[in-house]
Image 1 (tube, rainbow, N blue to C red):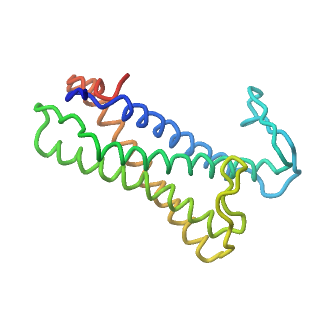
Image 2 (cartoon, rainbow, N blue to C red):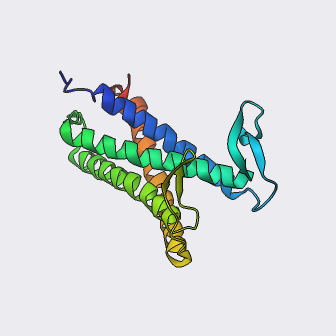
Image 3 (tube, helix red, strand yellow):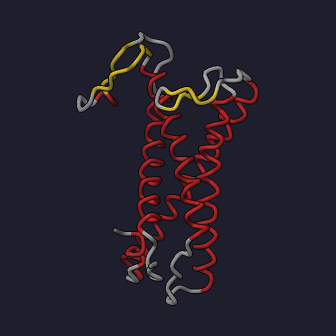
Length: 197
């Protein structure tokens, strides 16, 4: 039975998995773009040079190539999880917003959620298209998925689209977090309990 005051456990799990993965992808995207092109190929990577975990590679690659492939693999996984999240959302009605919220606040909340869903699809989709039009294609954790079409013009277009969608998504995530904190600490309406385990 669904609790009308809370999201389902599946929805909660998907929400937090996707949130953590997206935030990690932002950090990884920033990190990997700072790495120099070229360099020596290696068969093991000290993950983020922290000394905490060494990733053994099936075949030698430069650190930049490794991190780009990791970013693509996690991004593709996020796209699949978002698809599952959208399906689950369509099949399960979310809990109603509190009556204490003003009408305009509810409209902004619904609009922001719809934009978040849209950007959670557009951002990884633009990344997938960037990969498709590169010469490398998509390898999902070393498993070949899509060959590269090697079209530099389309690749560059989707790179720009991916970066633009990232800027919009991080802004929406910031608004989403700010609204959640406002509800928790100013309004004190316990709205965060709807998305907690």
